[in-house]
Amino acid sequence: MTSNKLENDVYVSVGDDLKAQEETIYLSSIPGFRKSIAQSVKEMKKGETVSMDEAFESQK
Image 1: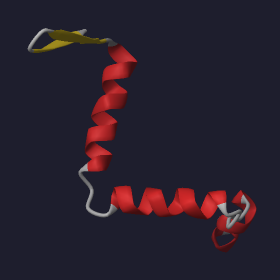
Image 2 (image 1 turned 45 degrees about the vertical axis):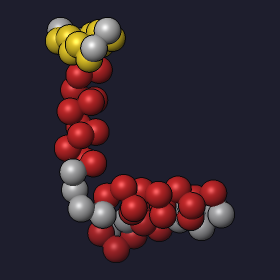
Image 3 (image 1 turned 90 degrees about the horizontal axis):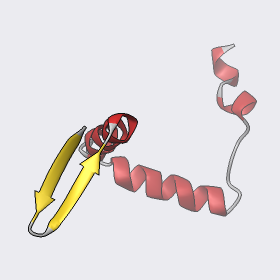
């Protein structure tokens, strides 16, 4: 368990939550990652998706 204090607020993080935060920080540090995810969400909302079979067809 860790805790961080910012002025009068205290944030406590336990186990899996801390791991998830660390992963988010790491992924957010990759150049272009956020932009790529935002673009993917837009495409998904427009129905511009492919099935898992289609996505991995070339690996068969």
